[in-house]
Image 1 (cartoon, helix red, strand yellow):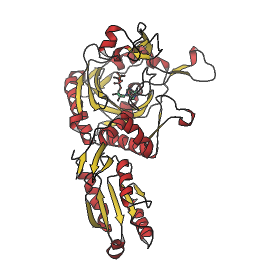
Image 2 (cartoon, helix red, strand yellow):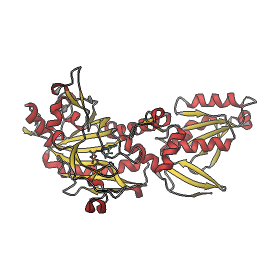
Image 3 (cartoon, helix red, strand yellow):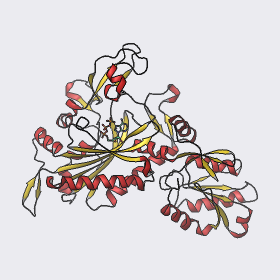
Image 4 (cartoon, protein in one colour):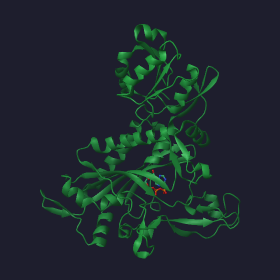
Length: 447
Ligand code: ATP
């Protein structure tokens, strides 16, 4: 029987991610670049699977949501219209003594009240507003005329394409546009691994509606998005809503709820659901001089749609899935580290091991693996004791492992071992695909 030992700490997660090839520090051989991370062989698989899961959930399962992939660099007027040039700022304070920088609104209450550095107790400067957008120049001459920004959110690419999509996409209001892509913010404080980084990925869906229906659609997406995280396999007890108070609301939002996850460093935002009203479309009409209103042919009514936004962090979801999955257990007096993530997200679905390399078992295992490759991502491992091979796959989150032994040669059966329960069953190789597909479909985490 397995006994759960402790919850995840960020240090343990960072070390497992490096050890197993999920996530590496960027430019590590040069000492690393702070807050930038690279996704290794397992990490990129996990990230892609989360993205695919989101895309299916937000586009494929709806007949009125379509996709878009807009450029990262956009006309600079976009960011004037959106309010980001003026308002996308955080209050920055410096410690006069140790020179560290902090976001004033993120300091603990005590440090805020006393105006003291949380690290060394030194005096802090007055807050000054700092714009989070990265600037660069398009073309060889770095002057004001060539200034462009790296987008701080993917949403604006959707708004400026609203007309293009509804005219060509054969969609009628209410309809949504979904997009996944990189966003960049020059964050003042980046810590907690990949939680807050300057370069990250967002998965956003902007849902365009008639203004009179904003309450109904806001509620709909708020609930649907919460359910999504449960489907993703995140434990419900670790999820909650947080409603933004008046002082937290972004400049474009009328009402906003965050879905939060309880990380080892506290409850933190995972996704924002916002009623952005007609703010963005109106501003783009004003700044571009183009008509972005919508004509309802049936009702003969022209209006500027409201937008309900669902904005999730892809890289932040990677951290959530890893944090939620990380489990330490005691098994037979030994510690077992296992990632209990949903099998749909696991970078490797099936580990395949010959009991020993000789007597044709390696060849047989290779043959079984080759067949499974058609349907699943597999990993072949013939190195070391079977127990150690299981442990390596536990740490990678591999939900199913197969061992091919002498009996397999006789009757074509193999041992199928389940990651979470460590239960082992004997099964014929011809039945593997069905059994694994079934187990993926039926998967429910026990603890
Ligand atoms: P905060 O107030 O914490 O800076 P925010 O409320 O500005 O964040 P949004 O603009 O609502 O965040 O962004 C939507 C989602 O994008 C967030 O819920 C988060 O998952 C992700 N996200 C935002 N900033 C970052 C970042 N710097 N690194 C990683 N993910 C981020």
